[in-house]
Image (cartoon, rainbow, N blue to C red; front, side):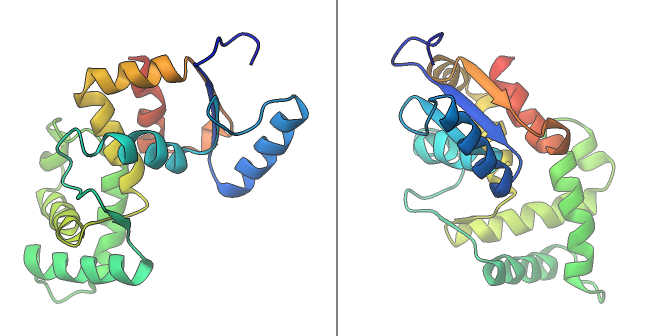
Length: 190
């Protein structure tokens, strides 16, 4: 905190809530506490509270001002609607969603040819699912880093604002982040 001049701060990000609690305790012993100058939490928490929440009203991401995080039953229902609207097959929509969910987390940059090229049916399923969530004013857990990544990538001013607010970024448990979360972490430094 001595190296980062006020009003700037540091972002200390980790993979899950248990790690965030441990990180917060360790940093508190060094005099760094959560507040205006220090974000200490998960990548999902950072994406939601520092990117999606503050900037979703400024850029078109399809969320209403009063968006909510989908409950598990709401997300499952959206999967079923999306499956009917995009595939309408005889197999279990949730089993198929397992494959779609992996693609969604892996292919974060939808401007790349791989998004549709490797499996257009899954891409349609994912897009139908997200459309159904947005229709209800919802986003799901995986939307948090995905939307934040897209917002940062497509809007240089958001990237600059984050860089100005958090010039120092510490990432704990980096090896556990996964592709989408990795992209979110490296996006602000591009």
